[in-house]
Amino acid sequence: MFDKVLIANRGEIAVRVIRACQDLGVRTVAVYSDADRLSPHVLVAGEAIRIGPAPATESYLQADVIIEAAHRTGAQAIHPGYGFMAENAEFARLVEEEGLVFIGPPAAAIAAMGDKTAARRRMIDAGVPVIPGSESLDDVAQAVSAGDRIGWPVLLKAVAGGGGKGMRVIEAAGDLPRALEAARREAGQSFGDPRVYVEKYLLDPRHIEIQVLADSKGCVIHLGERECSIQRRHQKLIEESPSPAVDADLRARMGHVAVAAARAVGYVGAGTVEFLYQDGEFFFLEMNTRIQVEHPVTEFVTGVDLVQEQLRVAAGEPLSVQPNADWPVGHSLECRISGEDPFHGFLPSSGRITSLQVPCGPGVRWDGGIVEHFDVGLHYDPLLGKLIVHAADRDQAILRMRRALRELQIEGVRTTQPFHLAVMDEPDFRAGDISVRYLERHPGLVESGGADWHARAAAVAATLLEHRGRRGGSGISVDVGTLAPAGSQVGMSEWRRRFRPEDLA
Image (tube, rainbow, N blue to C red; front, side, top):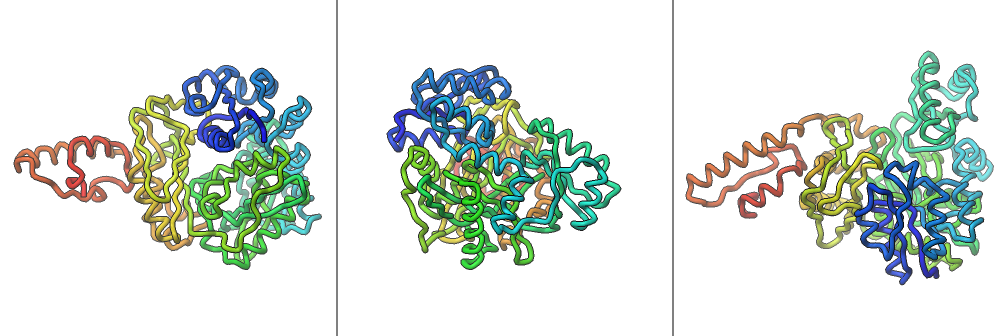
Protein backbone atom coordinates (compact mmCIF):
# COMPACT_ATOMS: atom_id res chain seq x y z
CA MET A 1 0.00 0.00 0.00
CA PHE A 2 1.08 3.58 -0.62
CA ASP A 3 2.72 5.58 2.14
CA LYS A 4 1.32 8.94 0.98
CA VAL A 5 -1.41 9.95 -1.51
CA LEU A 6 -2.18 13.41 -2.91
CA ILE A 7 -5.86 14.14 -3.53
CA ALA A 8 -6.22 16.34 -6.60
CA ASN A 9 -9.69 17.63 -5.76
CA ARG A 10 -11.70 19.61 -3.24
CA GLY A 11 -14.99 19.55 -1.34
CA GLU A 12 -16.79 16.47 -0.13
CA ILE A 13 -15.06 13.99 -2.44
CA ALA A 14 -11.63 15.11 -1.23
CA VAL A 15 -12.76 14.60 2.37
CA ARG A 16 -14.17 11.18 1.42
CA VAL A 17 -10.90 10.04 -0.17
CA ILE A 18 -8.84 11.37 2.75
CA ARG A 19 -10.93 9.35 5.20
CA ALA A 20 -10.47 6.17 3.14
CA CYS A 21 -6.71 6.74 3.11
CA GLN A 22 -6.61 7.34 6.84
CA ASP A 23 -8.56 4.14 7.46
CA LEU A 24 -5.79 2.29 5.60
CA GLY A 25 -3.00 4.09 7.44
CA VAL A 26 -2.04 6.12 4.37
CA ARG A 27 -0.83 9.70 4.84
CA THR A 28 -2.60 12.37 2.80
CA VAL A 29 -1.84 15.60 0.98
CA ALA A 30 -4.58 18.09 0.10
CA VAL A 31 -4.27 20.73 -2.58
CA TYR A 32 -6.16 23.99 -2.40
CA SER A 33 -6.83 27.21 -4.24
CA ASP A 34 -6.91 30.60 -2.56
CA ALA A 35 -10.70 30.26 -2.19
CA ASP A 36 -10.30 26.93 -0.35
CA ARG A 37 -7.58 27.90 2.10
CA LEU A 38 -9.76 26.96 5.11
CA SER A 39 -11.91 24.31 3.46
CA PRO A 40 -12.67 21.05 5.31
CA HIS A 41 -10.53 18.92 3.00
CA VAL A 42 -7.54 21.12 3.83
CA LEU A 43 -8.16 20.85 7.55
CA VAL A 44 -8.56 17.06 7.70
CA ALA A 45 -5.59 16.15 5.48
CA GLY A 46 -2.17 15.39 6.94
CA GLU A 47 -0.66 18.28 4.99
CA ALA A 48 -1.81 20.74 2.36
CA ILE A 49 -0.23 22.72 -0.44
CA ARG A 50 -1.47 25.77 -2.35
CA ILE A 51 -1.81 25.32 -6.11
CA GLY A 52 -3.11 28.70 -7.31
CA PRO A 53 -5.86 31.33 -7.42
CA ALA A 54 -9.57 30.59 -7.07
CA PRO A 55 -10.48 29.91 -10.74
CA ALA A 56 -10.24 26.17 -11.42
CA THR A 57 -8.39 26.84 -14.67
CA GLU A 58 -5.60 28.38 -12.59
CA SER A 59 -5.53 25.76 -9.83
CA TYR A 60 -7.37 22.44 -9.88
CA LEU A 61 -7.00 22.09 -13.66
CA GLN A 62 -3.26 22.80 -13.69
CA ALA A 63 -1.77 19.35 -14.30
CA ASP A 64 1.87 20.38 -14.00
CA VAL A 65 1.27 22.24 -10.72
CA ILE A 66 -0.54 19.25 -9.20
CA ILE A 67 2.17 16.83 -10.24
CA GLU A 68 4.85 19.15 -8.86
CA ALA A 69 2.94 19.30 -5.56
CA ALA A 70 3.01 15.50 -5.41
CA HIS A 71 6.78 15.46 -5.95
CA ARG A 72 7.40 18.20 -3.39
CA THR A 73 5.43 16.40 -0.68
CA GLY A 74 6.73 12.92 -1.43
CA ALA A 75 3.36 11.52 -2.48
CA GLN A 76 3.57 8.28 -4.45
CA ALA A 77 0.11 8.43 -6.00
CA ILE A 78 -2.59 10.89 -7.02
CA HIS A 79 -6.33 10.33 -6.50
CA PRO A 80 -8.35 12.62 -8.81
CA GLY A 81 -11.78 12.20 -7.19
CA TYR A 82 -14.48 13.12 -9.71
CA GLY A 83 -14.67 16.13 -12.00
CA PHE A 84 -11.66 18.34 -12.71
CA MET A 85 -8.87 15.98 -13.90
CA ALA A 86 -10.57 12.68 -13.05
CA GLU A 87 -11.37 11.70 -16.64
CA ASN A 88 -8.50 13.49 -18.36
CA ALA A 89 -6.49 10.84 -20.19
CA GLU A 90 -3.59 13.23 -20.76
CA PHE A 91 -3.34 13.95 -17.04
CA ALA A 92 -3.34 10.23 -16.23
CA ARG A 93 -0.57 9.72 -18.79
CA LEU A 94 1.52 12.58 -17.38
CA VAL A 95 1.15 11.21 -13.83
CA GLU A 96 2.44 7.82 -14.98
CA GLU A 97 5.31 9.38 -16.95
CA GLU A 98 6.38 11.27 -13.82
CA GLY A 99 6.81 8.00 -11.93
CA LEU A 100 3.62 8.44 -9.91
CA VAL A 101 0.55 6.21 -9.73
CA PHE A 102 -2.77 7.49 -11.06
CA ILE A 103 -5.53 6.06 -8.85
CA GLY A 104 -7.91 5.31 -11.66
CA PRO A 105 -8.03 3.39 -14.92
CA PRO A 106 -5.17 3.41 -17.46
CA ALA A 107 -4.97 6.48 -19.67
CA ALA A 108 -5.89 4.32 -22.68
CA ALA A 109 -9.16 3.23 -21.02
CA ILE A 110 -10.06 6.83 -20.16
CA ALA A 111 -9.38 7.89 -23.74
CA ALA A 112 -11.37 4.97 -25.15
CA MET A 113 -14.46 5.89 -23.14
CA GLY A 114 -13.93 9.66 -23.24
CA ASP A 115 -14.69 9.92 -26.95
CA LYS A 116 -18.36 9.02 -27.00
CA THR A 117 -18.55 7.99 -30.65
CA ALA A 118 -15.42 5.84 -30.35
CA ALA A 119 -16.88 4.30 -27.19
CA ARG A 120 -20.08 3.48 -29.07
CA ARG A 121 -18.07 1.63 -31.71
CA ARG A 122 -16.19 -0.34 -29.07
CA MET A 123 -19.40 -1.29 -27.31
CA ILE A 124 -21.00 -2.45 -30.55
CA ASP A 125 -17.95 -4.61 -31.25
CA ALA A 126 -18.23 -6.03 -27.72
CA GLY A 127 -21.88 -6.95 -28.22
CA VAL A 128 -23.20 -4.26 -25.87
CA PRO A 129 -26.65 -2.88 -26.82
CA VAL A 130 -26.27 0.74 -27.92
CA ILE A 131 -28.86 3.43 -28.67
CA PRO A 132 -29.10 4.06 -32.43
CA GLY A 133 -26.93 7.06 -33.30
CA SER A 134 -24.36 8.63 -35.61
CA GLU A 135 -20.68 9.44 -35.85
CA SER A 136 -19.56 13.03 -35.20
CA LEU A 137 -21.33 15.49 -37.47
CA ASP A 138 -19.67 17.80 -39.99
CA ASP A 139 -22.72 19.84 -40.99
CA VAL A 140 -26.49 20.23 -40.77
CA ALA A 141 -27.09 17.99 -43.79
CA GLN A 142 -25.38 15.09 -42.05
CA ALA A 143 -27.42 15.74 -38.93
CA VAL A 144 -30.69 15.77 -40.88
CA SER A 145 -29.75 12.57 -42.66
CA ALA A 146 -28.95 10.90 -39.34
CA GLY A 147 -32.22 12.08 -37.84
CA ASP A 148 -34.22 10.75 -40.78
CA ARG A 149 -32.46 7.39 -40.47
CA ILE A 150 -32.75 7.09 -36.69
CA GLY A 151 -36.19 8.64 -36.36
CA TRP A 152 -37.20 11.90 -34.70
CA PRO A 153 -36.84 13.21 -32.04
CA VAL A 154 -33.07 12.94 -31.62
CA LEU A 155 -30.57 14.09 -29.02
CA LEU A 156 -27.52 16.17 -29.89
CA LYS A 157 -24.60 15.22 -27.62
CA ALA A 158 -20.99 16.29 -27.17
CA VAL A 159 -18.41 13.77 -28.36
CA ALA A 160 -15.91 14.65 -25.63
CA GLY A 161 -17.99 15.04 -22.49
CA GLY A 162 -21.17 14.58 -20.52
CA GLY A 163 -23.13 16.17 -17.69
CA GLY A 164 -25.63 17.69 -20.12
CA LYS A 165 -23.11 20.08 -21.69
CA GLY A 166 -23.69 20.50 -25.42
CA MET A 167 -26.88 18.45 -25.23
CA ARG A 168 -30.04 19.42 -27.10
CA VAL A 169 -33.32 17.61 -27.86
CA ILE A 170 -34.30 18.09 -31.51
CA GLU A 171 -37.93 17.45 -32.41
CA ALA A 172 -37.67 18.01 -36.19
CA ALA A 173 -35.13 18.74 -38.93
CA GLY A 174 -36.05 22.42 -38.99
CA ASP A 175 -34.77 22.85 -35.45
CA LEU A 176 -31.29 21.57 -36.27
CA PRO A 177 -29.35 24.55 -37.68
CA ARG A 178 -29.58 26.78 -34.62
CA ALA A 179 -29.36 23.88 -32.14
CA LEU A 180 -26.30 22.40 -33.82
CA GLU A 181 -24.48 25.72 -33.66
CA ALA A 182 -25.35 26.20 -29.98
CA ALA A 183 -24.42 22.63 -29.05
CA ARG A 184 -21.04 22.93 -30.78
CA ARG A 185 -20.32 26.21 -29.05
CA GLU A 186 -21.19 24.86 -25.60
CA ALA A 187 -19.24 21.63 -26.18
CA GLY A 188 -16.18 23.60 -27.24
CA GLN A 189 -16.36 25.85 -24.20
CA SER A 190 -16.88 22.94 -21.79
CA PHE A 191 -14.52 20.30 -23.18
CA GLY A 192 -12.26 22.06 -25.67
CA ASP A 193 -13.79 19.90 -28.41
CA PRO A 194 -16.79 21.20 -30.42
CA ARG A 195 -17.70 17.88 -32.03
CA VAL A 196 -21.23 16.59 -31.52
CA TYR A 197 -23.24 13.60 -32.65
CA VAL A 198 -26.87 12.46 -32.47
CA GLU A 199 -28.62 9.61 -30.72
CA LYS A 200 -32.21 8.45 -30.80
CA TYR A 201 -34.10 10.29 -28.10
CA LEU A 202 -35.96 7.89 -25.83
CA LEU A 203 -39.16 9.57 -24.67
CA ASP A 204 -39.46 8.36 -21.09
CA PRO A 205 -36.56 6.12 -20.00
CA ARG A 206 -35.05 5.39 -16.63
CA HIS A 207 -31.38 6.17 -16.04
CA ILE A 208 -29.79 3.09 -14.47
CA GLU A 209 -26.09 2.54 -13.93
CA ILE A 210 -23.99 -0.44 -12.93
CA GLN A 211 -20.99 -0.14 -10.60
CA VAL A 212 -17.97 -2.16 -11.72
CA LEU A 213 -14.63 -2.95 -10.07
CA ALA A 214 -11.61 -4.38 -11.86
CA ASP A 215 -8.08 -5.20 -10.79
CA SER A 216 -4.88 -5.56 -12.78
CA LYS A 217 -5.03 -9.36 -12.44
CA GLY A 218 -7.94 -9.69 -14.87
CA CYS A 219 -10.78 -9.84 -12.34
CA VAL A 220 -13.82 -7.69 -13.23
CA ILE A 221 -17.00 -7.72 -11.14
CA HIS A 222 -20.17 -5.66 -10.81
CA LEU A 223 -21.86 -4.56 -7.60
CA GLY A 224 -25.40 -4.07 -8.86
CA GLU A 225 -27.26 -1.03 -10.03
CA ARG A 226 -28.16 2.49 -9.00
CA GLU A 227 -31.29 4.33 -10.13
CA CYS A 228 -30.40 7.90 -11.14
CA SER A 229 -33.53 8.97 -13.01
CA ILE A 230 -34.44 12.08 -11.02
CA GLN A 231 -32.45 14.71 -12.85
CA ARG A 232 -32.54 18.33 -13.89
CA ARG A 233 -31.00 19.13 -17.28
CA HIS A 234 -29.23 15.77 -17.21
CA GLN A 235 -27.73 16.52 -13.78
CA LYS A 236 -28.59 13.88 -11.17
CA LEU A 237 -30.37 15.00 -8.03
CA ILE A 238 -31.43 11.81 -6.20
CA GLU A 239 -30.00 8.30 -6.48
CA GLU A 240 -30.91 4.97 -4.95
CA SER A 241 -29.93 1.34 -4.88
CA PRO A 242 -31.44 -1.02 -5.79
CA SER A 243 -33.66 0.37 -8.55
CA PRO A 244 -37.41 -0.13 -8.06
CA ALA A 245 -37.56 -1.30 -11.68
CA VAL A 246 -34.81 -3.92 -11.61
CA ASP A 247 -35.31 -7.54 -10.57
CA ALA A 248 -32.65 -10.20 -10.10
CA ASP A 249 -32.78 -11.35 -13.73
CA LEU A 250 -32.44 -7.85 -15.19
CA ARG A 251 -29.68 -7.05 -12.69
CA ALA A 252 -27.73 -10.10 -13.82
CA ARG A 253 -28.15 -9.22 -17.51
CA MET A 254 -27.17 -5.58 -17.09
CA GLY A 255 -24.26 -6.56 -14.86
CA HIS A 256 -23.00 -9.03 -17.45
CA VAL A 257 -23.07 -6.34 -20.14
CA ALA A 258 -21.33 -3.81 -17.86
CA VAL A 259 -18.53 -6.26 -17.14
CA ALA A 260 -18.16 -6.92 -20.87
CA ALA A 261 -17.94 -3.16 -21.50
CA ALA A 262 -15.20 -2.79 -18.88
CA ARG A 263 -13.24 -5.72 -20.29
CA ALA A 264 -13.50 -4.27 -23.80
CA VAL A 265 -11.31 -1.30 -22.83
CA GLY A 266 -8.96 -3.04 -20.40
CA TYR A 267 -10.51 -1.29 -17.44
CA VAL A 268 -8.84 -1.22 -14.00
CA GLY A 269 -10.29 0.38 -10.87
CA ALA A 270 -13.79 1.61 -10.00
CA GLY A 271 -16.04 2.69 -12.85
CA THR A 272 -19.68 3.04 -13.79
CA VAL A 273 -21.46 1.88 -16.92
CA GLU A 274 -24.61 3.92 -17.53
CA PHE A 275 -27.71 2.69 -19.34
CA LEU A 276 -31.10 3.98 -20.39
CA TYR A 277 -33.93 1.53 -19.68
CA GLN A 278 -37.35 1.68 -21.35
CA ASP A 279 -40.04 -0.85 -22.26
CA GLY A 280 -38.00 -3.80 -21.04
CA GLU A 281 -34.87 -2.88 -23.05
CA PHE A 282 -31.65 -1.28 -21.89
CA PHE A 283 -29.05 0.58 -23.94
CA PHE A 284 -25.47 1.65 -23.23
CA LEU A 285 -25.23 5.39 -22.60
CA GLU A 286 -21.64 6.00 -21.50
CA MET A 287 -18.98 4.89 -19.05
CA ASN A 288 -17.72 7.12 -16.25
CA THR A 289 -14.07 6.24 -15.72
CA ARG A 290 -13.88 7.40 -12.09
CA ILE A 291 -15.56 7.14 -8.72
CA GLN A 292 -19.14 8.43 -8.94
CA VAL A 293 -20.80 11.08 -6.80
CA GLU A 294 -23.46 8.53 -5.86
CA HIS A 295 -21.09 5.70 -4.89
CA PRO A 296 -22.21 5.69 -1.19
CA VAL A 297 -25.57 4.04 -1.98
CA THR A 298 -23.71 1.08 -3.46
CA GLU A 299 -21.44 0.98 -0.43
CA PHE A 300 -24.47 0.81 1.86
CA VAL A 301 -26.16 -2.13 0.08
CA THR A 302 -22.95 -4.14 -0.46
CA GLY A 303 -20.78 -3.22 2.51
CA VAL A 304 -17.85 -2.54 0.13
CA ASP A 305 -15.70 0.57 0.55
CA LEU A 306 -15.25 1.52 -3.11
CA VAL A 307 -12.57 4.13 -2.48
CA GLN A 308 -10.47 1.69 -0.48
CA GLU A 309 -10.81 -0.78 -3.35
CA GLN A 310 -9.55 1.93 -5.71
CA LEU A 311 -6.51 2.40 -3.51
CA ARG A 312 -5.79 -1.34 -3.23
CA VAL A 313 -6.10 -1.94 -6.96
CA ALA A 314 -3.90 1.05 -7.79
CA ALA A 315 -1.28 -0.33 -5.40
CA GLY A 316 -1.23 -3.56 -7.41
CA GLU A 317 -3.32 -5.65 -5.05
CA PRO A 318 -6.17 -7.91 -6.20
CA LEU A 319 -9.77 -7.02 -5.39
CA SER A 320 -10.53 -7.84 -1.78
CA VAL A 321 -14.19 -8.63 -2.55
CA GLN A 322 -16.10 -11.01 -4.76
CA PRO A 323 -19.75 -10.87 -5.90
CA ASN A 324 -22.17 -11.81 -3.16
CA ALA A 325 -25.47 -13.52 -3.88
CA ASP A 326 -27.03 -11.56 -1.00
CA TRP A 327 -26.43 -8.18 -2.67
CA PRO A 328 -28.23 -5.82 -2.47
CA VAL A 329 -28.87 -5.81 1.26
CA GLY A 330 -31.65 -3.39 2.15
CA HIS A 331 -32.21 -0.11 0.33
CA SER A 332 -30.20 3.12 0.16
CA LEU A 333 -31.08 6.66 -0.96
CA GLU A 334 -28.86 9.68 -1.63
CA CYS A 335 -29.89 13.32 -1.91
CA ARG A 336 -27.40 15.80 -3.32
CA ILE A 337 -27.56 18.95 -1.21
CA SER A 338 -26.42 21.86 -3.35
CA GLY A 339 -26.11 25.59 -2.79
CA GLU A 340 -28.93 26.35 -5.20
CA ASP A 341 -32.44 27.82 -4.96
CA PRO A 342 -34.85 25.11 -6.20
CA PHE A 343 -37.74 27.60 -6.33
CA HIS A 344 -35.93 29.94 -8.74
CA GLY A 345 -34.52 27.71 -11.45
CA PHE A 346 -31.83 26.24 -9.20
CA LEU A 347 -29.89 29.49 -9.29
CA PRO A 348 -26.57 29.19 -7.41
CA SER A 349 -26.57 30.64 -3.90
CA SER A 350 -23.43 31.98 -2.29
CA GLY A 351 -22.64 33.27 1.18
CA ARG A 352 -21.28 32.17 4.55
CA ILE A 353 -22.57 29.08 6.36
CA THR A 354 -23.82 30.66 9.57
CA SER A 355 -25.23 27.48 11.09
CA LEU A 356 -24.78 23.80 10.28
CA GLN A 357 -26.42 20.85 11.95
CA VAL A 358 -26.05 17.48 10.25
CA PRO A 359 -28.35 14.52 10.93
CA CYS A 360 -27.22 11.33 12.57
CA GLY A 361 -28.68 8.12 13.94
CA PRO A 362 -28.98 4.57 12.57
CA GLY A 363 -28.41 4.24 8.83
CA VAL A 364 -27.62 7.93 8.20
CA ARG A 365 -24.44 9.22 6.53
CA TRP A 366 -23.41 12.77 5.69
CA ASP A 367 -20.57 13.26 3.18
CA GLY A 368 -20.01 16.99 3.44
CA GLY A 369 -17.59 19.58 2.16
CA ILE A 370 -18.70 22.46 4.37
CA VAL A 371 -18.43 23.57 8.00
CA GLU A 372 -19.85 26.49 9.94
CA HIS A 373 -18.39 29.84 8.84
CA PHE A 374 -17.35 28.32 5.49
CA ASP A 375 -17.72 30.74 2.58
CA VAL A 376 -19.66 29.23 -0.34
CA GLY A 377 -18.56 30.93 -3.54
CA LEU A 378 -19.42 30.62 -7.20
CA HIS A 379 -16.09 29.34 -8.48
CA TYR A 380 -16.93 25.62 -8.30
CA ASP A 381 -19.74 23.08 -8.47
CA PRO A 382 -22.52 24.04 -6.02
CA LEU A 383 -22.57 20.61 -4.30
CA LEU A 384 -22.28 21.16 -0.53
CA GLY A 385 -22.71 17.61 0.62
CA LYS A 386 -24.57 14.35 0.19
CA LEU A 387 -27.13 12.93 2.58
CA ILE A 388 -27.31 9.14 2.36
CA VAL A 389 -29.52 6.71 4.27
CA HIS A 390 -29.89 2.94 4.46
CA ALA A 391 -32.81 0.88 5.73
CA ALA A 392 -34.34 -2.58 5.43
CA ASP A 393 -36.52 -1.68 2.42
CA ARG A 394 -37.40 1.26 0.19
CA ASP A 395 -40.39 2.48 2.21
CA GLN A 396 -38.31 2.60 5.38
CA ALA A 397 -35.44 4.29 3.52
CA ILE A 398 -37.78 7.05 2.33
CA LEU A 399 -39.06 7.62 5.86
CA ARG A 400 -35.50 7.68 7.19
CA MET A 401 -34.43 10.17 4.51
CA ARG A 402 -37.45 12.31 5.31
CA ARG A 403 -36.41 12.36 8.97
CA ALA A 404 -32.77 13.08 8.14
CA LEU A 405 -33.67 15.92 5.80
CA ARG A 406 -35.75 17.52 8.52
CA GLU A 407 -32.80 17.27 10.92
CA LEU A 408 -30.38 18.80 8.43
CA GLN A 409 -29.93 22.54 8.94
CA ILE A 410 -27.81 24.71 6.68
CA GLU A 411 -28.22 28.44 7.12
CA GLY A 412 -26.55 31.29 5.30
CA VAL A 413 -27.24 30.03 1.78
CA ARG A 414 -30.27 28.61 0.05
CA THR A 415 -30.07 24.88 -0.64
CA THR A 416 -31.94 22.13 -2.44
CA GLN A 417 -33.06 20.58 0.85
CA PRO A 418 -36.72 21.73 0.50
CA PHE A 419 -36.93 20.13 -2.95
CA HIS A 420 -35.62 16.80 -1.68
CA LEU A 421 -38.03 16.76 1.24
CA ALA A 422 -40.94 17.50 -1.09
CA VAL A 423 -39.91 14.58 -3.33
CA MET A 424 -39.93 12.20 -0.35
CA ASP A 425 -43.64 12.97 0.09
CA GLU A 426 -44.58 12.85 -3.61
CA PRO A 427 -46.82 9.82 -4.41
CA ASP A 428 -45.20 8.79 -7.71
CA PHE A 429 -41.74 8.81 -6.15
CA ARG A 430 -42.95 6.79 -3.18
CA ALA A 431 -44.44 4.29 -5.63
CA GLY A 432 -41.18 4.07 -7.62
CA ASP A 433 -42.89 5.48 -10.73
CA ILE A 434 -40.00 7.66 -11.93
CA SER A 435 -38.08 8.41 -15.12
CA VAL A 436 -35.73 11.07 -16.47
CA ARG A 437 -38.85 13.18 -17.08
CA TYR A 438 -39.89 13.08 -13.44
CA LEU A 439 -39.43 16.83 -12.86
CA GLU A 440 -41.16 17.63 -16.13
CA ARG A 441 -44.16 15.64 -14.91
CA HIS A 442 -44.07 17.24 -11.44
CA PRO A 443 -43.35 20.96 -12.00
CA GLY A 444 -44.92 21.87 -8.66
CA LEU A 445 -41.86 20.50 -6.89
CA VAL A 446 -39.75 23.37 -8.18
CA GLU A 447 -42.27 26.19 -8.44
CA SER A 448 -41.75 29.35 -6.40
CA GLY A 449 -44.09 28.34 -3.59
CA GLY A 450 -41.25 28.48 -1.09
CA ALA A 451 -39.91 31.87 -2.06
CA ASP A 452 -41.76 33.77 0.67
CA TRP A 453 -40.82 31.35 3.46
CA HIS A 454 -38.69 33.94 5.24
CA ALA A 455 -41.60 36.35 5.63
CA ARG A 456 -44.09 33.67 6.56
CA ALA A 457 -41.76 32.09 9.11
CA ALA A 458 -41.24 35.46 10.78
CA ALA A 459 -44.97 36.15 10.85
CA VAL A 460 -45.80 32.73 12.26
CA ALA A 461 -43.07 32.97 14.90
CA ALA A 462 -44.31 36.40 16.01
CA THR A 463 -47.90 35.18 16.21
CA LEU A 464 -46.93 32.13 18.24
CA LEU A 465 -44.83 34.19 20.64
CA GLU A 466 -47.72 36.55 21.26
CA HIS A 467 -50.11 33.61 21.68
CA ARG A 468 -47.70 31.93 24.11
CA GLY A 469 -47.42 35.13 26.16
CA ARG A 470 -51.18 35.43 26.46
CA ARG A 471 -51.37 31.82 27.67
CA GLY A 472 -48.69 32.35 30.26
CA GLY A 473 -46.00 30.40 28.44
CA SER A 474 -47.99 27.19 28.00
CA GLY A 475 -47.11 24.86 25.14
CA ILE A 476 -48.44 25.26 21.61
CA SER A 477 -49.06 22.43 19.15
CA VAL A 478 -48.25 23.47 15.60
CA ASP A 479 -48.23 21.49 12.37
CA VAL A 480 -45.27 23.14 10.63
CA GLY A 481 -46.23 21.46 7.36
CA THR A 482 -49.34 23.64 7.14
CA LEU A 483 -47.33 26.83 7.56
CA ALA A 484 -44.56 26.47 5.00
CA PRO A 485 -43.65 24.52 1.87
CA ALA A 486 -42.56 20.97 2.57
CA GLY A 487 -38.93 20.88 3.58
CA SER A 488 -38.35 24.58 4.15
CA GLN A 489 -35.16 24.68 6.15
CA VAL A 490 -34.59 28.42 6.53
CA GLY A 491 -35.73 29.58 9.93
CA MET A 492 -36.04 26.14 11.56
CA SER A 493 -33.19 26.83 13.98
CA GLU A 494 -34.94 30.07 14.95
CA TRP A 495 -38.06 28.04 15.75
CA ARG A 496 -36.00 25.71 17.94
CA ARG A 497 -34.42 28.62 19.78
CA ARG A 498 -37.78 30.14 20.61
CA PHE A 499 -39.88 27.03 21.36
CA ARG A 500 -39.58 23.77 23.24
CA PRO A 501 -39.54 20.60 21.06
CA GLU A 502 -43.09 19.78 22.09
CA ASP A 503 -44.18 23.17 20.75
CA LEU A 504 -43.15 22.08 17.27
CA ALA A 505 -45.09 18.80 17.14
